[in-house]
Image (cartoon, rainbow over all chains, first blue to last red; front, side):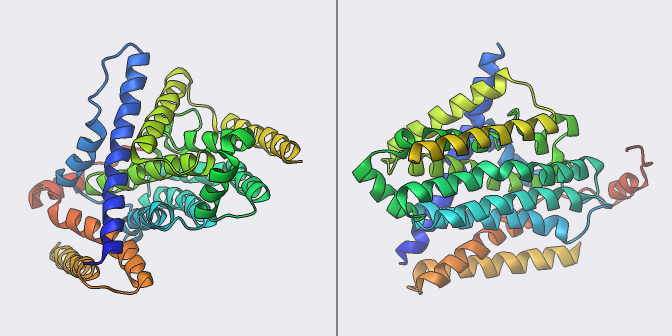
Length: 286
Length: 71
């Protein structure tokens, strides 16, 4: 038996299940803050599975086969992220490249559907690329501090010098804002804002929506995993779980108490965070 | 429709065989990575395409005839 393949399969399934439960937890916490009972924590998981048996049809306006292929693309990149991250402990650069590809998938899923909501989301995805500034800044700051971009080496660095969250708190804050922008209902989630129905996913329903939701669960797990690994260090499985639940709870609190920002404000706010984070971190390193 | 079924089944069988092959036999790491990145997503997608419910033919025609009301 090939243990590497078994390890990959196990990690992908784990990422999907934990990511789904965390999304359900986020909705539950948001509901409780807003004095609602909220859906069960497993609701997101149930929705994902339900979409696979729902009646599916493809819109006449969809650009086939691109409309289907782009959903597979999202899955390819996040399965690759699981391999680069928990399985290999590979380069952080690849994780960030995958994150950039996620943006391209948002753009193309929106444009391939033929829906005006999707197209608006597609335009917002391009627009929000400007808010990726913190992403590259975090990468450079970590490199300046640790001298490496390899996740395994960053973990080793932290085992000697202590967690990076203490020495690079502003970089951690920038990465946190980046993850927040991927949370459902977050103030920065302009590509999926309810003002444009479901954004780039509006015309992807039935099995394709379920398929996208699987990838998004894996993406959520991976973003939290990268944050915990890069800024706190290697944790035990229970440590990771506690960290992910805590981060999701904080994001749920922010999402429940803040409205969706106007796209201009969202980008401006993220770039302002980036500016403060970059200047502050460089001053701290010097 | 039939074409979609044939393509879906072919993709599903090929991807499952690939995953099982990589699981049972010891292959070089890079092949295992390639198999995982390509075949795991394709297996899920093709399973969905096989599994999904389709509307009845006559209903599908009605849906297509529905006047364009949006946008």
